[in-house]
Length: 333
Ligand SMILES: *[C@@H]1O[C@H](CO)[C@@H](O)[C@H](O)[C@H]1NC(C)=O
Ligand SMILES: *[C@@H]1O[C@H](CO)[C@@H](O)[C@H](O)[C@H]1NC(C)=O
Ligand SMILES: *[C@@H]1O[C@H](CO)[C@@H](O)[C@H](O)[C@H]1NC(C)=O
Ligand SMILES: *[C@@H]1O[C@H](CO)[C@@H](O)[C@H](O)[C@H]1NC(C)=O
Image 1 (tube, rainbow, N blue to C red):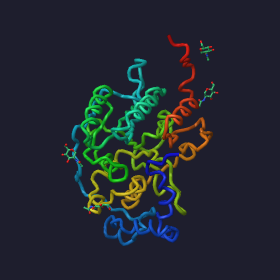
Image 2: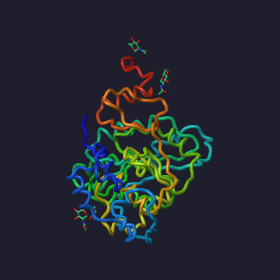
Image 3: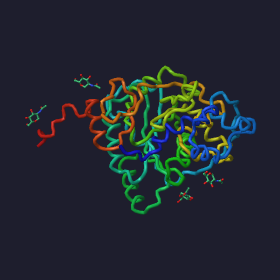
Image 4: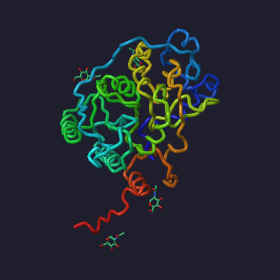
């Protein structure tokens, strides 16, 4: 199985989240961790690596710092991929709104098409405004730029951030800290970050969110470390409430301490733990999970299934969730 993403690292990093577990960390990794700049405010810093654990004291970020500016951000409001806006006329007033950002790269065009269809073919979530956007950093290659421009014009679901394309070098920070400004005119209750190897079942997620608070929320696949069931949420997909995204966007400490380099999901948990944010925390295991090697651990109540790293695994997913049911290719004219 390919492990081109960061996710393969999780098992290594898990052990390093809390100070006592440092003993378990392989030496090379320990060196890497110690090389990371210390973080947070002075009293957070005094806890050393312990700040990775939950319960660290709160430090409020200062106001208004923005590291990045949108460039060719194509955030046309036209297309609402996961929302069946065009359908039945009298829709209930949305009582919940969710922005789903799928972090991807320009070159992954084929995957993006599959993911786009995966969202488009889902039943709409009722009484919810859900928008799906594909999120890039600067598109520097001229061929990529042309093709992405065409794709953006056709689908209107592309967001380009001012950052250099990367997986674990600040893209999530750029995303969360740009969203509050990019979508300031119509804020969402919740902001999600997910990847292009995750199949997200939007309606199931929305039902899960419906009864939750709209503030100070951090929800996903909780990654347990020691006694803490969820010091951070796995990068396959997590949700923060709008106020948490805004807090990230205004927290100057994160950038001052250059604390955006490393596993993006672990880092978000770390920022929130240091800042005392995201206290309404929800673990959606086992309804979020990795698809195993044999592709036989699908479950009917799935919210998200991850590690869909090739077409075969996407095909199995579509088949299991009956997306392909009733489509008889050999019958087509
Ligand atoms: C992204 O592109 C913009 C405009 O082309 C440029 O000003 C900016 O420096 C670039 N940012 C990065 C991080 O490469
Ligand atoms: C931030 O950290 C990265 C990775 O550790 C390093 O390459 C970079 O030079 C640092 N930048 C600053 C401004 O310290
Ligand atoms: C797919 O369809 C079959 C047959 O109707 C049904 O038994 C099954 O529960 C469906 N699977 C899911 C995940 O909805
Ligand atoms: C699909 O079409 C083929 C060829 O016409 C036919 O033999 C088959 O029974 C059809 N399958 C279903 C499930 O309708």
